[in-house]
Image (cartoon, rainbow, N blue to C red; front, side, top):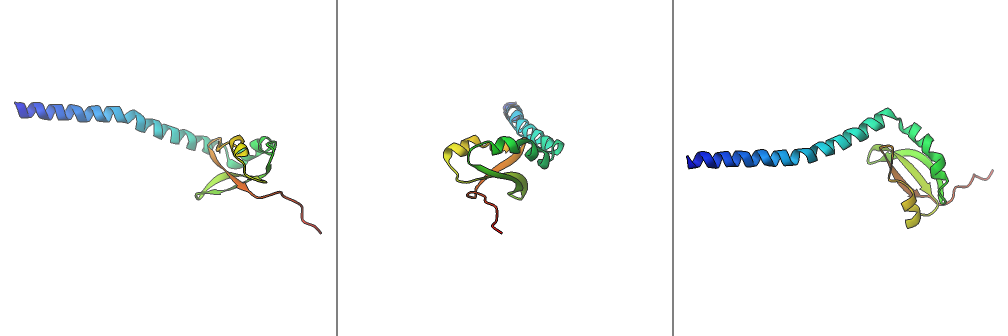
Length: 112
């Protein structure tokens, strides 16, 4: 009888632990699915086109492009010089796509 009570208490403890941790796992999966769905709905080219004007309006930004970050498509923002203030103004993601800031210096046209 005491052994049956121990098994029941253990079973209830396991069920409670699963019930408590399940919502946290579900939220992570939902966030990932939401981000992936958003990315599937909008092509990175469209996201870049829609946001380039606002990115280029930030003083110090000299260009934007599509690149690879950790072997996945991302939006590159080229700046003349990285500063903490400039880094705060540039978002880390745009519509689900990661944004990477890269210091390039000023862009100038080639001389003929």
